Image (tube, rainbow, N blue to C red; front, side, top):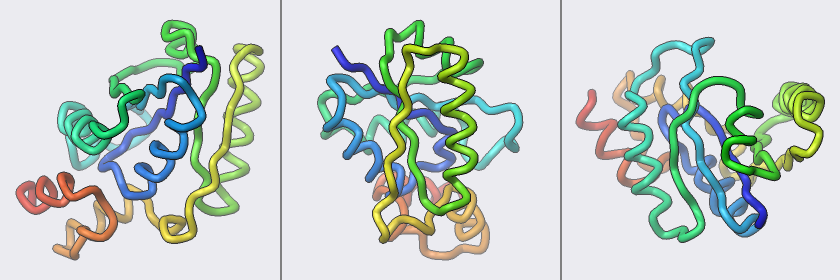
Length: 158
């Protein structure tokens, strides 16, 4: 069984994330979308519980997708979940350098773990969670950039 993990902070999930999730779900038997508590990032706009809720609601149409929370090293989480592959999304050229470094260090730590880099669809290449948070902070319309369920939460939060 091919088990993939797509990990991120998803604060909030964007349509770009959804594009990667939907495409990745076709490549593996089971895809775990893992919300990471990243101590190197700011607290964020949404709690872990809210992010999990957004992801569960946004992916409920994908029968082979599970949503979970984790902290610590991704390779240790991958071992715990018997994962074969990590899924990562690339939006812009500068993402490649960072993702290549991460893939190489993960491969060094766990040689059996592969990384698949999926290139973002051009219509989502400019999207990032930080841009959505900034747009929302200034009361901009986020509805075209995030799943519908997230738009409602953003409006209520602010």
